[in-house]
Amino acid sequence: MGAEFICGIVSGGDKGSFDGIDECDLIIACDRGYTHLSHEGIKADLFVGDFDSCEEVTLDNIPRLELEKEKDDTDTLAAIRFALGQGITRLRLYCCYGGRMDHFLGNIQAAAYAASKGVKVSMCDENNEMYFMNSGSITIKKREGYSLSLLSITDNSTGVWIEGAKYPLKEQTVSNIFPIGISNDWVDDITISVKSGVIAVICCKL
Image 1 (cartoon, one colour):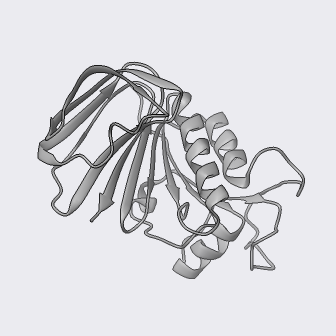
Image 2: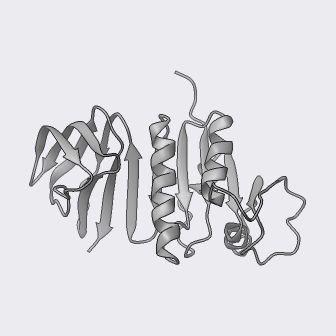
């Protein structure tokens, strides 16, 4: 197995934590995300957007993928498509929470799109961590003061297991119209597995 190729994409939602961004091999700023990075002194490798929310006049001569204002893809999804074309194996999404609800939900769908392509995806801020996957398993260390939830993003996710939690699941099909996986509690480290379908695993600070 080859080395991981990690991409960090910074969107234009509320500014949040940049934990782990120093481990990213490729950093992409989506419009106002460039301003968030600039204020932290972090250099982007690529700017993606239509300049509708970026406060900066100059972009430090970094490469640009300029988008039309009238388009089907959001800035974040366009950045994800670019990153997939570079062969990334892991995606970390930053500044995707807060702001407009439609943009937040769009970011969730964009994250699910990347996960459907086999990429390991995380989307975090100071109080929330979301992990997206379409097969395999993830183990999350026991965390005091946090709840853990699981949601199917696709219509159905099959072969879902939850182990190490107060409310386990064994080889279940989880639907995206019935939130059976909300607000679980840790007994030990929790391992979540899925056979098919895209699921979101969510850790929320209480």
